[in-house]
Length: 153
Image (cartoon, rainbow, N blue to C red; front, side, top):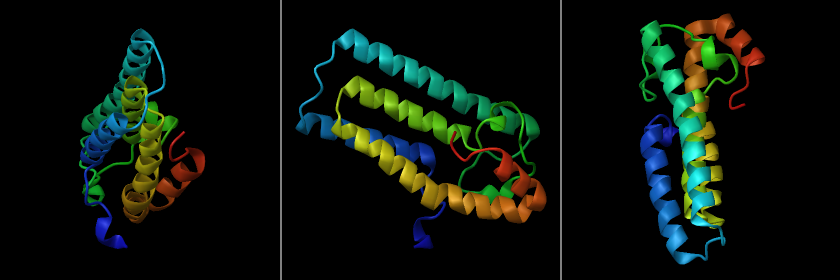
């Protein structure tokens, strides 16, 4: 099923899942949680997630390589410093944390299922194809990086 590989930009996927999370929260009973706690948790998760994503984007821009997730073959350099020392996919972790913040704000246990959908979809249709391309572009350097740094955390 390669038809979905590298087709949906991850931010668009996250936005679609956020919409589904909201719709789901309208149908199922939320957890009883004070608004201040929900808001605080949501803001913290979103702030951390966006900080991680932005730091990854800035490193790509500084290196002059593409940030377009649909065109990994346009990558001109392998970034292994900064946040990329800890994860190979900081932009995707940032989106996951942002979705987690949204789920916390909604206080919907069912909305948490969409976090798993995001990870499963990203692994199969975004990250695995990216890794194949990056392996062909950067060879042993990328293989060593994969051995040293985890895909997520």
